[in-house]
Length: 126
Image 1 (cartoon, rainbow, N blue to C red):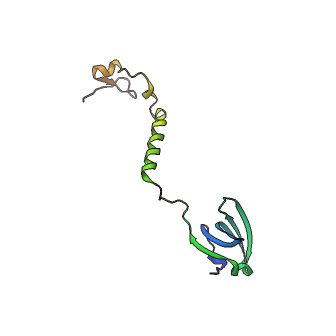
Image 2: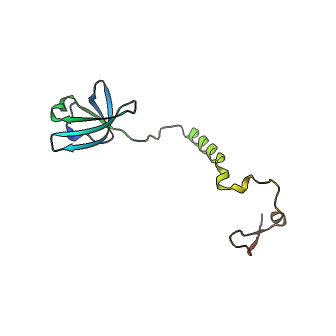
Image 3: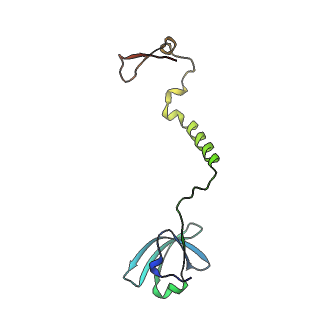
């Protein structure tokens, strides 16, 4: 199916730009109404540019717009990787979590002092 230059949009799959391969349109720059500069990415992730004229329209074919991201991966694998990353970086959020496993005297008595207000203490209940 032949395509017109107006059918080219960023994210669409375009055939006929590179011989024997389909490329993905990245950006378009119009030069009047008869020519367009197409910036494209091929399947090997190489970026290229080509000036297309109205005379190139019979060679062009436009496929469906491709999504930048897909959400069809395995959810359990993602959850496992996310949890492993969270555990690995936990020391950045709670640096005191790696300190001594022994309880502090304030925790043993059931009273704890507020760090943001030094004079304020509160009773811990279980």
